[in-house]
Image: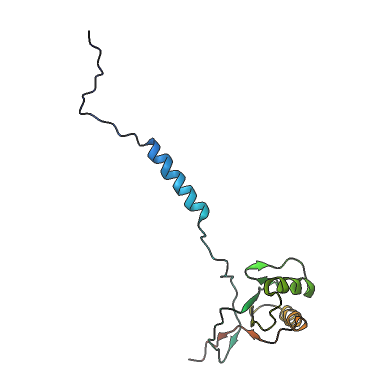
Length: 141
């Protein structure tokens, strides 16, 4: 007596469970290793000026000051308050290069004292090339 399976030899079955496992593993790998958002886009509304220059310097150190007066260098919030903490962070970011251009991007609603504190810190460290980022006046073409 011959015992055979009920399946016909021409029937075949595709096992997709291992394929799903591999695809989910790849999906998790790509999700975990992909950077979705650049933190360089801090929401800062710049003050307006009648003539805005469009000079961009990719080597410039950018200090961002938000509405509440917090400082950011290289998209990292500066821990601690005051000029001393800001000076330490600037020295870590720049090193000994005091000829590097510095751009201060302060929100239009930032207290003036926060901007002055940043300028004092830069001046005490010996920086000579300083620029304030603005947007063009809405009334001018």
